[in-house]
Image (cartoon, rainbow, N blue to C red; front, side, top):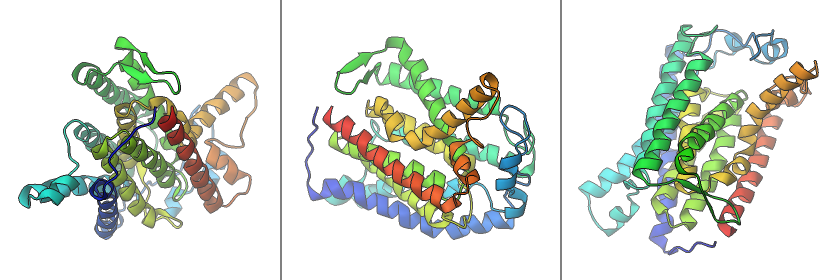
Amino acid sequence: MMYNTAMDAITVAKVLIPSAAAFFLGIAITPFVAHYLYANRMWKKQSVRKTIDGKEASISALLHKDEIKQTPRMGGIVIWMSVALTTLGFFFFAYFFPNETTEKLNFLSRNQVWLPLFTLIAASFVGLIDDVLVVRGNGGYVGGGLSLRTRILTVLLIGAVGGWWFFAKLGMSSIVIPFDGELALGILFVPFFMLVMLALFSGGVIDGIDGLAGGVLATPFAAYAGIAFFQNQIDLAAFCAVIVGGILAFLWFNIPPARFYMSETGILGLTTTLTVVAFLTKEVLVLPLIALPLLSAPASDIFQLLSKKFRGKKLFLVAPLHHHFEALGWPPYKVTMRFWVISAICAILGMSIALIS
């Protein structure tokens, strides 16, 4: 199905201007965030020592020596703070200076933006708690932080609440199958929502090379901004574009050598929000293609474990996949930029399928 929308200047500006505002706002607040993180030594004090199956992670430990790098975590604060301030800023600007232009530029609508904005802030706060535990060396696993089980249960809980809200409050119980109409899931919509959110969250393991996570996460939001725009969900498109602007501000300081890492406060907030956005557009089945590089990271972990269990040997030199290429001798910047390129191509293909199906 092809979607139509009024291509007037204000409509386009409503998407582009807030995105640029989020970028410049993110650039402006970063020095304050960075100063705090460095002044309080907010970095992980111990490198990765063990793989997910409990064995020695000799290659990963060699590739990443966190105690030597002393690069702070919590850089994701720049993203969600710039997004929140931009969204609320345009809302209050329209409230205190009401006119036709300011009201059209305000994109904080109840039916399109409240839910993803709330998800971003709530999930980012949970991630921030984990980051604080990590840098303090407290928590459920070696090196500090919430245990993997706790984080998985937290994501499933967020997914359960989100899925229930879509099902019970928004009356949504179906998804679009490209080129084949809609598929009604009924109550199974809720566990499906939870599964998608958990899959995206698992992609957080990609946050291991300077600039990688930011670029790989920016392109899916850009793709869904385009999808939402052509579905005439202009407010949602603007919100997605604002997230892209916030991520680009983060990337400005995260490209090699990284000023800070995104870490859990960024990963948890962005992946859960991307889930909500995908379901709001009903184009969730193109998500595996749009976010393929992101999902390739946890998939490579799974294949690595299965290969060691059933074949008795590794499939990759080291998992996740991006570290495999590092172990092959690729410079980190080459891994990052090639993942960016693949992410852009996947986003274009996924968005195209969503728009023409």
